[in-house]
Length: 503
Ligand code: ATP
Image (cartoon, rainbow, N blue to C red; front, side):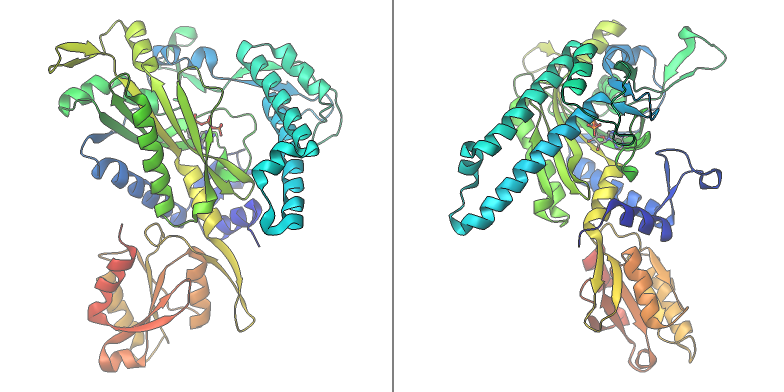
């Protein structure tokens, strides 16, 4: 049975992956702290991404820019004027909602009806079922699809033109009720900027107002010439960064999927204008391959092309992942044109062009962006890894089948018994292994219970030291997913493990 978000959240808390932030004060909404295993897993995801993006690409380098940036940055980027969510309050429940999300939920309901019809027909027709044909001809399905298209077009056009009354009217026309109170007593729709602001030093008021960055990308754009020159790069080249971003999300729920403080792993690729479609396809292929190589299941990914593009893009898609609540955005791939560099040139008055010595011409590079949420990637790994299993002997276990390269603990060293010289032998092995791997020593409780503990945190290998070890210097390695055990010599141990868990 598929894990729910609730299963995953409670497992994360129980085993030290993620805690609600400031829990002793009853927590802070949509803010989470990563515990001992969570921070290991998070670091491994970062390293895995950094290695693929920076180390393996000679024309991509990394930076680590400040969270605070000059306030004009956010005027140039469009975030001061255009980073808004439409909000609506219910007067009875006093709950606040994003108008677009309420409407999207209606579209999802219609989509679910379509899916149900398709499933029914697929069962009825068996092998002869032609899904595409069914979808385009079945009157009921066609009807639902038309309704979805109409709602979507009304929603998009009212958002794009900033017509908040039209958005409210759509909510009324669709007869949407408050999901909590069931009532329809709404306020007008208002715009709400997602950026957090604070004041710089002692300068209060508008002049000292600065923002917490809502995306890491701008730190890359404003540094692009510094990096290009100091790294002696020429387009096509990329700049990568991992760092925190902040958005005052209205509906921050669904565990770590949507938080107000989160981390992004972004790469901006600077290219010659006119080559963006080639590079767009290139990075789409590269990024989906990176995801699939992890082995979380190819069927868990799909592309979603954006038909309505953000103000900065001329092509964009998401890589969606099959989270417990359905397919949702995990990563965005955007062709940002020269929007950002052009805007920074205009606002700063500085030349940000690249001078091509081969052609003696200068141009403002176009930018291709890949942007993935680290926390969403964490949730994707957890969702695909969490399994409750019934074993052959009738017992049950909860196991995290985390890809070994990402697993927080790579190997546990367990003396079979806590006597007869076994702990001493096991400790000696532990001293050796911990130089190469994140290893854990555990001598408490029966061996079966210790295996379960390691399963629950996703440790791919357990090394058990028993009486035979003292005689012939061999140990058993137990593999997490198959639970199979294999005897290897202590000498071979490091090589065997390295082969299985290294990046
Ligand atoms: P969404 O539509 O889900 O709000 P977005 O389109 O605003 O996301 P981008 O601005 O493209 O997201 O940001 C790039 C990536 O950053 C997203 O693909 C996502 O993985 C991550 N991300 C964005 N907002 C959040 C958030 N509030 N919490 C966690 N991760 C986030």
